[in-house]
Image (cartoon, rainbow, N blue to C red; front, side, top):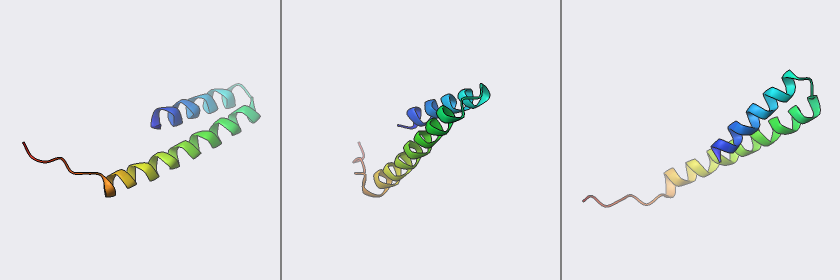
Length: 55
């Protein structure tokens, strides 16, 4: 999911560079949304993840 967020961020930066403000804004919002979902899921896995038994 983090890869998708970075991909949309790159798309937003390229679109902004070429002057496509509508596409850049939309891609940036999608990237921000995916990043926050990634952060929430990462924290949930850290809290509720099962520890592995030692070998």
